[in-house]
Image (cartoon, rainbow, N blue to C red; front, side, top):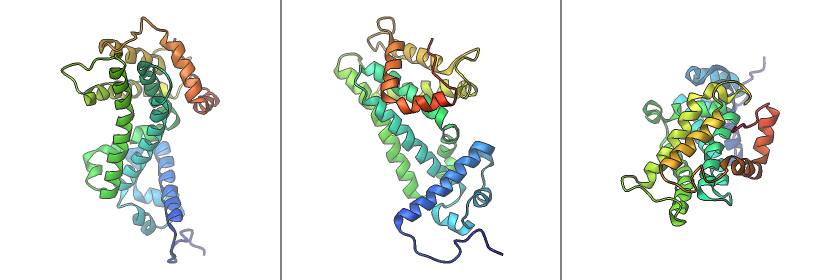
Length: 258
């Protein structure tokens, strides 16, 4: 009888093959999270879902927590790509901040398992059982993500579109925008996977509204009453994220900000 875990014979793999094998394990775990939820993930279930032995899985990850952190790092990498593209859009700082916040929603819709599991990967219980290398990687990735938002805020200050409140730091403004966005998406998470024509609160519309309320409250100009941000956001999305919008459309999901 052939053992499906055919990696028992020792062999030397190059770095590319090792990374490919590690990604196979990560992808299989993400699929399990999508099906069963992050709270039900175990190493045994992961081993049953891949063509590698438990020993091989442990060669890549210290345990379930280390694997979850690796998934969290992949999520942050995807998020940073979207944020960076939004930050580089040739528009006003406020328009870019709106675009960045909506790119977070794009990420949540296209990668629901990652969105749901990334917070779990940040718990103290997970951190205490992970490799120093992976923890350092997350710290560096988070700094990059925060840097994109910092850059937009700094541009707004330089262009005299925004004055940093005396009682707040750049980090606090950055946190305000992030927490507001994460909160809207999380609270309306059941609506994220539905078509935008559904009744009740539409997640992208409420994200748009709440972002404008926050930025107006921070006295970040031009104010929402002074510019048609809905139209400018639609144009920016079409220019910066055409493939993502096409994918959303194929899923029966089109943004409705009205």
